[in-house]
Image (cartoon, rainbow, N blue to C red):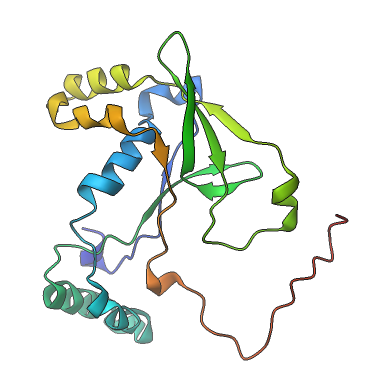
Length: 190
């Protein structure tokens, strides 16, 4: 529906696992499950990546260009969003590994920064960022059942304990500049 009105999605944010938002929370394993099992629909084949840049060339024709690209590539929509969680000190990432499970079934995740982006050198001096999810996977599947979903269709979610941040859709890559960017950091004393 978003593509139909000319919207190219950039991020899908997973909320941090706080107790106060547990009802609205889908586990990070579910985000990885979607990346692996569901995002095969909407992925633009590499031979059409050059056509993606046309989307921004003429903003008045965005909807038309999106529809042409969808038809030409045989995709029902453009899967341009990256699943990420926004973490203090790490930024937007979905690069994590499960390092434990609480006695209540909540997963303990250790996050790393998005390796596809440039970060301040201070990131190498930070400690690990660890979160405890607010909802166990079993509770999440039970909630899906209560909403009328067939939880069996999501049962492979148990197998996802490692996540990797998806690459950016080419339309969101920075262009080549006609100047060099310095690697010197002037606001930090390292």
